[in-house]
Length: 196
Image (cartoon, rainbow, N blue to C red; front, side, top):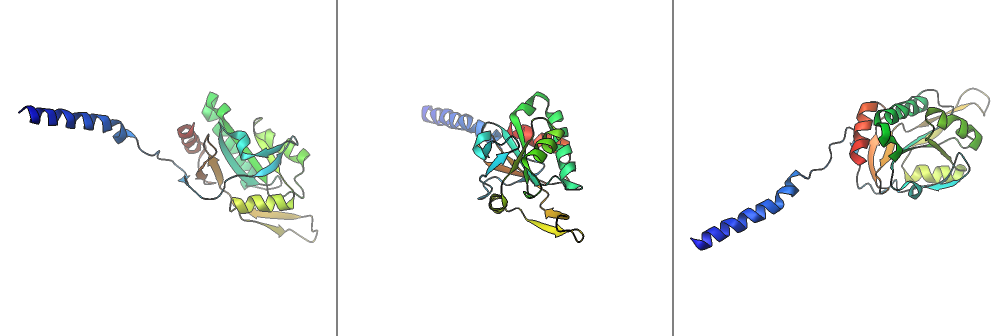
């Protein structure tokens, strides 16, 4: 009887020790969970104040990275406005979130233009740019499709077709989510809260 009682106590202790493991489950995100993806590891670009930047500069914050261009007629301004709404929804927690806008149009998107455009959506947002080679290298690292499309006879008139999703990185700089363009601000904010 003593052995049976000892076995029961030992079994109960083992089960109790594992109870906390049962409640640990992966977060259920509204957007696409891409944790463990083997690309989108970083960039080396310049911000709209002229400061060289890498993804490591933002360690400790949740980072949302969007690729676009300032003359984009629809997707880019709606995405940036949506991210401003997300920041408002997050309230005081928004100080731990960094939104980055990477231009895919370095020919026209100068430092000055990015400095006027990006913070107009939210003062904490940062615009990033590089030369043609740096832009192509960064787009390749993030598997971002982009292509110039002529608009009329003047070669200076063109649009840029591009991917519309945004990447989200956790505080350690690991890529975690792909946010769809059609995702609502509330759903994005809920996902970011899980990473904060």
